[in-house]
Structures are given as structure tokens and as C-alpha cells.
Image (cartoon, rainbow, N blue to C red; front, side, top):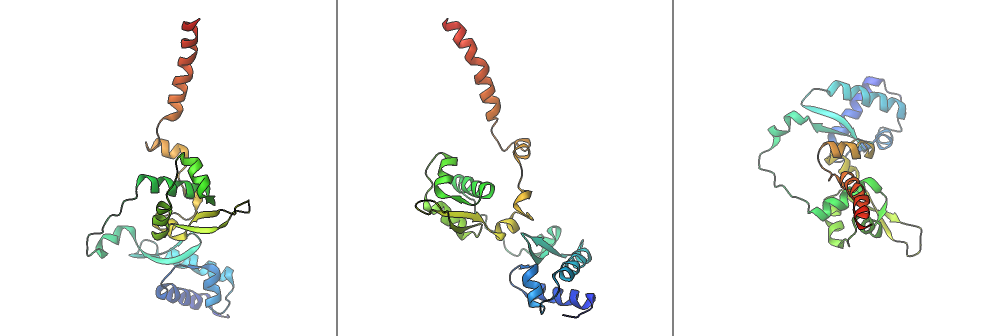
Length: 198
């Protein structure tokens, strides 16, 4: 495709505006007549800068590009009250395990959780579009393995799984029980009990 960069940017802008789903760089380049991916990436970066701070933005989530309403303007588009669908504690735990350990089998999920996981829990996460079947593990029995989806990244505003919070972040936010402190307290108490028995 021998278009000048401004024509390429206009073509990308029109394509992203008209598409129903976010597009990868490769799909965009192929759609535009096998455009040079480096030129497409440069045009995308220019468009992202152009739309930065406007009512709509061009963003990349999980390697896919799309238009989205600026976060501070989203309330203007809500006509009805959104129905909040809360995940059960089991579904939240399973989603976290899949996100941090993917690809992961159901047996591995159950091993990490310490309890059985119903098939319905994974079904709810797949219906939400956040978890997908990622294939089968090459071990006896060939269990199904699960992974997160680009929709998961998009919903939670993550560019990639590397943006998931770490243990220190979760602990600082008060989202983890102070298990380490409890174990340390137990370890300090055990020698005293042993001395009393002697």
C-alpha cells in the first residue's frame, strides 16, 4: 500500500471507527491492503496522541486497538442504570487463579483453592467473556486448560497481564489477609509451649 502517512492514518481511523471488535496490528495491516506494519504502528501512535484528552480515544488493550469513550465522559452515555452483576466469591477466586496462573486446568484451580470447583463457576466466567478454553495440557487424560481473554483485559483496563497487581500491591490495598504475620506469630509461640512442657 503506497499511501502517504496522513492517508494511512485516515484509513486506520475509518476502519477502527466502523469495526465492531478491537483489531490487532496484523489484522489492520492486512485489511488496509497489506500495509507495512511499522507504518501502521506509527500511524496508530500518532492517532492515539491526536485523540488523547478528547471525548473519545484510540487505545490498545491486549494487543488490540479500538475507539473508546474517555473515562471522564462515560457517564454522559448512560441512559439507564447499569445492572451490576456481582461474581460469587468462588467465581472471583477462580478468575484470579486463571489470570495469575494461565494456562491452568480445573484440577490445578482446585489444588490452589483447596476445594472443588463446580463447572458452573467456569461457565459463568466464560459467559462473561473473561475466560476461554485455551486447549488441552499434554499429559495423561489431556485436561482442558483455561486462560483469560482480551475482553478480560479490556474490562479491567489492562494492556496486558503484566499490569495485574502484585502481592505487595494487593497487601497495601488491604485485599490480602495478613497470613504471613499469623504464621510468624504461630512460629514465635511454639518454642514457648515446648519450654512449658519440659
